Image (cartoon, rainbow over the protein chains, first blue to last red):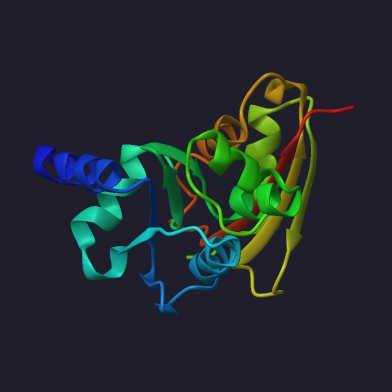
Length: 111
Length: 77
């Protein structure tokens, strides 16, 4: 990954409390896994920034090596990778997701 | 470009010799798999770290030849 790309990713992640790197945009996900995470976040009433990796090949490749995580979607909370679709779904199912977000100081509308 | 289920299972077993591994072909298309890996190696690791360990075992195939792997990791009870 080039340094400018890495810096761009750092800036994006630092720019919002909750950032989802996804395929498509939140209103129109283009992959079921990305869509599942969007649904969970919307269900919890968590505001987030969606980054469409399909619109940016540098970010799409860069984000995989950035966190040593090979797949999209990737959910970052306060600059830290929380997980991909499987982990987010599991945490939501177990009721841990809202708690983790709260712990990190992110407002959750529903719980 | 797809990967066979037994191949996935073998790579995981090589990395986690003690593991209980179940690989399921979710869609029957050789492209969307589910894997449940239970190993003592996951003890004390976060979920992120556990999944990263399995991805490392797959030697770069994840996201390439292997399009989708719904992953579930656990420590034996």
